[in-house]
Figure 1 (cartoon, helix red, strand yellow):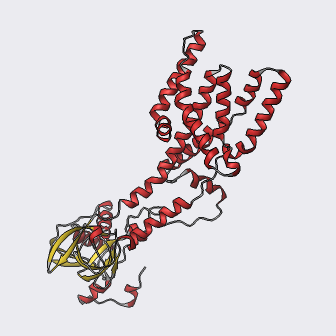
Figure 2 (cartoon, rainbow, N blue to C red):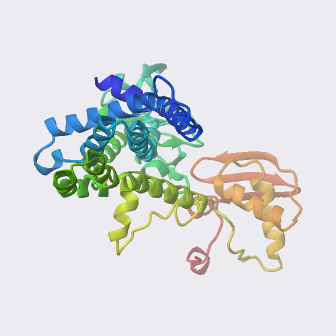
Figure 3 (spheres, rainbow, N blue to C red):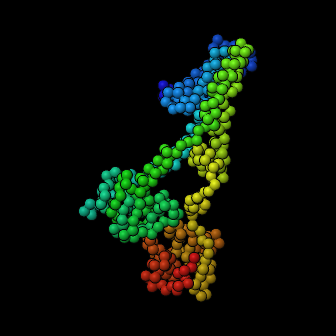
Length: 416
């Protein structure tokens, strides 16, 4: 029964039901009567999941939640069938089906982020055994294994660097937009991307104990424990069902007209709320997306109505996560800022580092000449060196430049 309900609730079946309901309306307007009204198809397709849901809630829900909008619309649909108003019965069933489909779409949006997070989990790793590399599945990695991570590979377990220097993109875990320089003794996290250097690490946390798996579990628990707000139609149904039933019964006893009694039940059906709530949520999510605001679920959107304080994740939310040159401060007398930027862009022209790309992009934007760099060398976690014309250029962090003998005064190091 559950599989049949899921099949009939799907979009293709709902479309088929709606087409037969439209056919019934056309025949009704034309005054044509068929032995079997096409509206029956819509009633059966869209009505079965409705009846199944109403019965399921009566059996398994507790307390007043047994009475829901599904029960109320089921009663109205059956009453309409009883008096021969098949089009009305099909109409209320179709509205409920469309509302359910729209709600499913909002749930899909909420699940996309979880699927993307799970897909970050590494599949393989390179284990070092007596100096030889062995590619193994991530679940085979045990604590204490020595793993080699090459540039462009995902780190398969939390660990400590034993050998090598690199820059690691940790944005999936920390939200940092720039790669973080790492050297011997530094900690690395599962699921992060090794950008530039090859490193050997000792696995300290593996499989379910890794930082990425803990993050996935936290998000899953937040999703599972999140109590969705009841739909307005379901909250109303708790007192609307008995009230409308008594009202319809009173109308029938007074008028002795079953059609009037059923009309009361159909008119009081919360079809507008069933359809309006998910429709408005979908419209709001779609409109927000056009302006670059991603809302993961309808429940999150509803809860925003009660929010008075918001904490933003900076990277990718308030910023684009792409570095750009903000200021050029030259310290060498007689060297203009344009010349300094041109030289730096020439040295960084072959670099894949985000900061190097930002420098070359700024030079291109200003129309500055970028010369061909000879003998280019990128040192992970440090910087780059290159020969531009008759000058040997070094672009990198302060500690590396100081190790090369470049003198800095205090004011230069403290520059923002």
